[in-house]
Length: 295
Ligand code: ADP
Ligand code: MG
Image 1 (cartoon, helix red, strand yellow):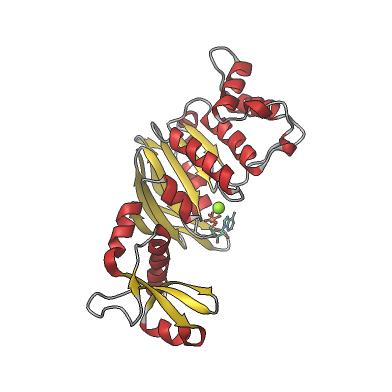
Image 2 (cartoon, rainbow, N blue to C red; image 1 turned 45 degrees about the horizontal axis):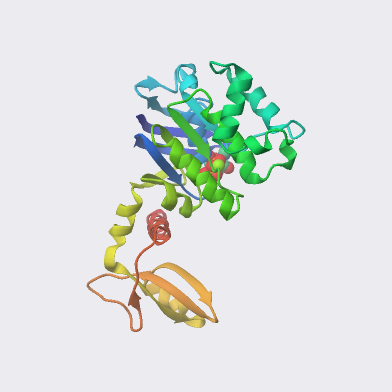
């Protein structure tokens, strides 16, 4: 289990990237969801023992990540947001090099481990191709291959699905889900769909604050029967917004298709019908509430 308490990070500037983050994370897939600049990478780098927080603590199964990061490095696999590969190497040579740096080997030696890992992430077929010929999804899978080497108890992946096409994304989901069966996997993302597809639990981070720590099911059921959808004319949206809590407004054929959260005592406006909330609705409403508090 991971236990993070009051984690704070102030970069020179000063920029407050984390403002007292506390979380407990168990085995399985945990999502850290938030917009760009929310503090996700900062959080991930601290958990990986690569960045020192300004204050607060982080523990992996009781071991202090902040003071003794070298104690957890052999139990950690990390795929950073910006992972640099040497493009002119083959996938196999690149992975072998990374495994050497990481200091892991297999019972049958490094070559054997390299091939096993390539198979595991479905890159066996491209082992001899140069990395520069890999698609975005193939590069991410190569990144995962080095992260899972040594069978770590904790895997951290920072925005791994950004830039993947839908098929690549689905394949990557399957791989991550498999890994999370017997480990802690922490995935950061700004894509709600990632969390909806993968995570049994997730937290929403915004401006360095955790504004929700929940599950997709709970987040949706919290909105329950209060979500309604209807049309609003374009020139009336501003006025409408003053008296209704809008989750989203999408322009369809010249009219706004609007989803709102309705106070049960008030009831919905004319023409609005109840809809099943998606996780995206829940997320958008959370961000709206946080806005209201910040304002
Ligand atoms: P995310 O990964 O959610 O996009 P980051 O953790 O990268 O967020 O950044 C959080 C905030 O900290 C942003 O405002 C960003 O500009 C700032 N930041 C990140 N790294 C540094 C740094 N090395 N120096 C100064 N500010 C930084
Ligand atoms: Mg980031």
